[in-house]
Amino acid sequence: VGDGLGGHKAGEVASTFALKRFKHAIEEARYGDRWVWPTNWGDHDFKTETHLLPGILQHAISSAHQFLHQTVRDHPEWRGMGTTIVAAIFSGDHLYFAHVGDSRLYLLRNGVLYQRTEDHSYVQFLVNTGQINAEEAKVHPGRSRLMQSLGGEAISIAHGEDILKPGDRLLLCTDGIHHMLPHERLEQILRQPEASPRQMTQQLIEEANVQGGRDNMAVIVVTI
Image 1 (cartoon, helix red, strand yellow):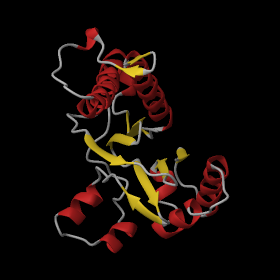
Image 2 (spheres, rainbow, N blue to C red):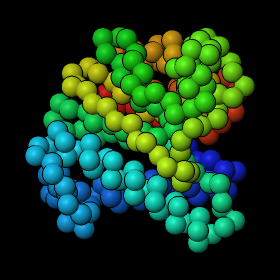
Image 3 (cartoon, rainbow, N blue to C red):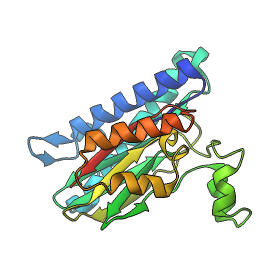
């Protein structure tokens, strides 16, 4: 998922273009039922899939970033546009994920919700450097200010991985969801034993709208 920046029109263009370019790169890396490193991507030194899949995510996100840069050069009226991105690949019982910006990935395991990504935001920087605490961050006026986004200056793509277990649930979402609903409420919604992923996504969006719906929302729920 991605959340566009730079005004309504430019933000929509940025997220749409970036996700399409990302998807194209991922499709290039699939050969039948196997992951491969396409020959047109250049050389690599991956010995195992454990290293291959983070490399594919890195390349796909970098490709989307470079595509946005070129788009802005071709269309100066879109200068300043950008987008967040959070993406994941499943392989067997492994989950590989990567992100730029403040769109997040959460893992629910045994009824407990863990945030597995750390926002590339000004507020998170203040928390990390001890200038404010986590509670102050929730209401800080600059909490939507990003330190990194696709299409911006040089980016540093964050990576992570997990071993998945039966019953795990994953949530990928933009700040239109996690800024509107506290961590505890996200956990309660995802803990519902009989709810389907579609029902949970609908509930997340509906409740975020009730709380003000002040930003665009994109959300994916996956049950393992």
